[in-house]
Length: 227
Image (cartoon, rainbow, N blue to C red; front, top):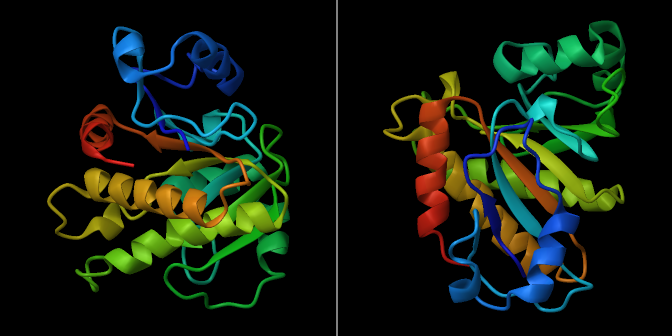
């Protein structure tokens, strides 16, 4: 499978997967493409089957994808941060009704889906509960589960592209020394496992680091990660 990291890319400078496929017709290995503004960490199995991982500096709500991920709380209630932003953009009343269709409380790492309500750039919202490292300082598996289960829900609903925020990298980060780096690592691990578990199902992950500092930490992890 393929890992793609787009450097120095904000949401208003989107590079499409089709563009990447065209590039790959002409460049077959890392040495050939190292001077491009793309890093390809592993070769692709065939041109008809390709999954991608893209890193963006900006808000996950500003992109266009099949699904956007809400860093939700256990009760699927409106919260702060990206959760509050998604409720605002989707329409609070509509999204409260949608969330009310699910039984709560959810567990850390759970993921459920609702319609995108008034968000025109997405077909659905996937709500996942990231762990609170303030009370669970070793909840790395639950963080991995939040990403992985979101991908499973994506597949179960016939969707392929997904826009993630950095889960549990804000107030839930507790005393993690580099929360953006840890969240990026767990997202990459989930991507790696999902593409191994479902090699015939193409997905396009868009992971969004909101701040400049988060982007720097996320890029460092992506540069070191081995597929």
